[in-house]
Image (cartoon, rainbow, N blue to C red; front, side):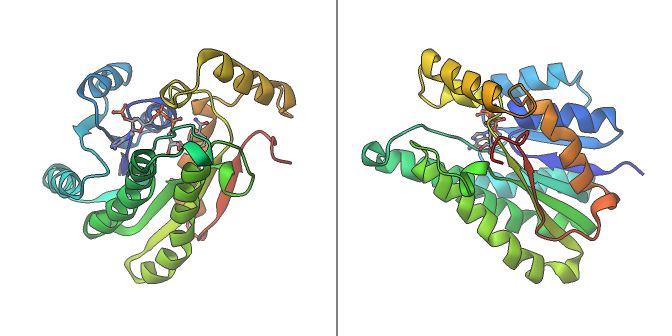
Length: 244
Ligand SMILES: NC(=O)c1ccc[n+]([C@@H]2O[C@H](COP(=O)([O-])OP(=O)(O)OC[C@H]3O[C@@H](n4cnc5c(N)ncnc54)[C@H](OP(=O)(O)O)[C@@H]3O)[C@@H](O)[C@H]2O)c1
């Protein structure tokens, strides 16, 4: 039977590439995003083989509505990719309350309550995969709040693996390195800074190129599949070896 997988933030970059890969591998895919036009374009890219919902992951009300809609249409799901996220480049001294609240609100609070509210419709067994980042263990300037949001997200995986074990829910982590996606443009970095960043990670990477969103997809598929049934709180660093 086909497995139902929800990808939050599936309208762009890593989420969209993962949606495409899972569809090509016979999964039923449900994507979310907060921008109507981006959702429409993503569904077009996916040749309308996915179901899409507008849902702001930082709004608990939106998450409730999303879960209700998915419950009516699909009854239960087998996997949840906690992927929706933002990055705003800002030095520690320039980080405003707004950047702090937005980043924590989407990357951590939104992720936290998305997991909580999806529990009733997660099958036994099912798999939750958290998309964090290499920033959790390697320091990069201008990422203080982003780093905190991803470290907070990783920190709950252990606890949830203990609390949710009776429900057959396992939680694992993908920790991507710098991956070329629209996130860089949205970060507030100018084009030169983005070019420098991507060039640096291409030149210094053991794989000789910058990571692409589609590089993450087979790793996600493994963590969603029964091949990873015995893994709990495993973190797979997908960075082409840049942090070695
Ligand atoms: N690219 C990298 O270098 C990298 C490295 C490590 C980790 N990551 C993580 O990977 C994840 C995906 O990043 P990406 O590079 O693919 O970025 P992206 O292309 O900007 O995609 C981000 C996705 O998240 C969605 N999103 C953002 N805020 C949302 C909200 N409040 N509610 C619902 N959806 C929301 C976006 O939807 P809209 O278009 O509607 O806003 C979009 O679908 C993020 O969690 C990011 O932190 C990225």
